[in-house]
Amino acid sequence: MTTAEAHPAATTDLLDRFLTGLRETLPAPFSLWAHGSLAGGDYQEGRSDLDLIAVVPHPLKPDEETRLATLHEGIDAELPLAAHLHCSYMPQGDLDDPDRTHFTWAHREAYARTVTPITRRELHTYGLVLRGDPIAGTLPPVEDRTLREYILTDLTGYWRPRTGRPELWLENVWVDLGLMVLARATVTLRDGTLVSKAEALAVLTELGAPAEVVADIERRRYEGGPADTAPDPGWLARRAELTLDWLVPALDRTVAEHTTDS
Image (tube, rainbow, N blue to C red; front, side):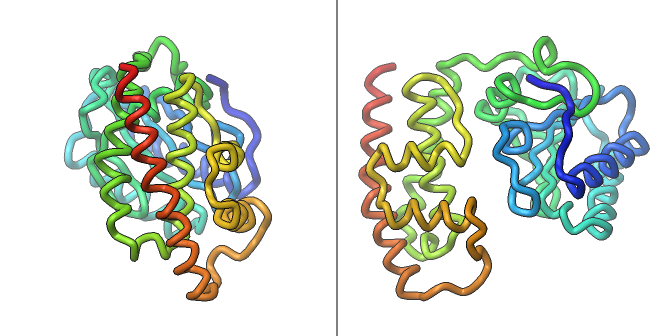
């Protein structure tokens, strides 16, 4: 866990504006922590999400949730980068329950979401304190068994069923996240460590993922290649086929290997 550090200019402006708004909106005291790429060293301004957790003194009341939604909508209107800002609001008394849902703002909408064991482990491993209390001693740690069970359930209950919908895999986001989730899950299941999305590319190569697909992800995400232009439909179809031909058995193999060693 680390404390606040320097970020790119637009990100710093957004975080400052958000913290100012939170001070005016939330009951004091509150803490604000970062996880994901912002905390883990893989952050790319304008591409990466800003994944945040706010710890509040008590469960939010409906009028407080409304004020927070208004705050987020206002910042979205002011700062384009705010579209990438996601924040879950955890009451101090509910920090030990990973199954409890919390008011969350993400993708410019309000949701009720859990703070997953993966997020909790990220916070303890390299979480960034932007305001308030330290993570260690405030957020209960995640047991290895809980983390492993969550990962296996995510692979079998979320990702494996979606391989049966080939139309999804024509989109960049499904190819990128599907492969990276498996690579990162493999490392965590194997030795308990967390790796970044960038580090996951090397893991994919080690696991035998299709080289063309890995190169495509790296080009778009890390080498400044176009992310939003319309690519060749023939390549999208071929990429989807290559991805699914490798991902389906890789998912099944990973789950089987780590289900038997519990």
